[in-house]
Length: 477
Image (cartoon, rainbow, N blue to C red; front, side, top):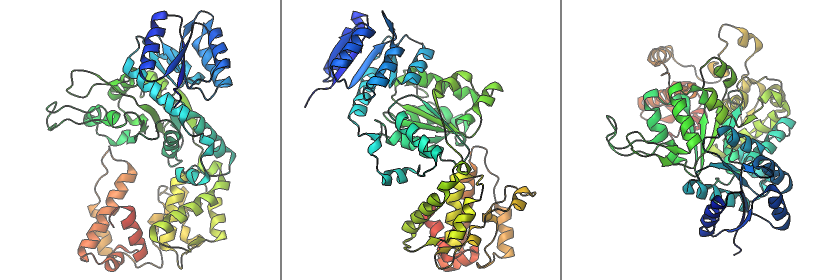
């Protein structure tokens, strides 16, 4: 096999020698340049799988060289070597298109991680070859201009290691975007670790992120790896990052900048190789202005901002998405011929979807369980009317409306269920809270009927098929 070739650009002989020795030991041949001019000449003569460049060069700066390589040799990943603690320089390099950065004095472990990732990227399949089936599995399907633009941005960002801040309304698909960035990049064979920052109790947050050592606190009966260690080599997705308390924001900032963590109770720091993707439906600019979110952390995670459009901004994609969600449900329930009537699709296209793609998926799931003869009609959708939305129960959804064809829930059971509903813990998301209630009610009905599903469905006031689908969805089948 042909050995990979790397370009090293630095005017300091000691740095060039250190980089050259390290890369040669990794089985990589090197070519050296002391100036931007020499680097451009070598780039025109040879094909490189990786470039490493210093920031300050005799005839220019490394960021200009990064831009040149991006324009003329876009398949060559380039990493920037920056001065220690020069966060602004590193961020500017990433924005210019640098694959990653490493600070002086060079940490050889971090250098090897960066080089390995860059070589994987050079050898990776062209993202444009991803077929339509893979696109569908990743959820970013549609013909609207805004979604096509988003897909192009995702493919470009997949080639970088820059932190990406994904903004958008709740239910718009921010995690799907993060998963696709990971899936198309050089880290795709390593872990993608999503974490809901608002769901972790404050007192456990440091241990959850960084891990802990046995005996470091009451209840720490054994060593535990945290989320950063679980995502080592892969991607850590910080969902609802705006919910992080200020004290944790400081520790997270250091972990991201230094690429090291210290588990609770440990004496030494450990290097970690993690790409950070973050998201929230809140306005971080306003939170920074209000002092609720650290500006330096926002600056660090917001190297590149990616906007996910709301579903109402791409109404032409609604029928396609609805049909896709229905096919998924049919596959799960072994149903072959379910369909949505044209009038129902028209009604969906004229609905504003305040809950975005997630709401559309929930509507199709509910309609499938309620429809007759596997045909979804407009009435099965139970879309919220303008009158309902403007009334006192603005948060009431179609799931609150009983189906006229299903058996009614008894007054006795309805009263006991209402009385037994626990208060939602502050750290628990609304979605998880509602799922826990649904799980508890289904379990209770099944226990009362000695696991007779037909009888349990009657007690719950839903159809047998609706119960079967919910059991599968909640992993209770």
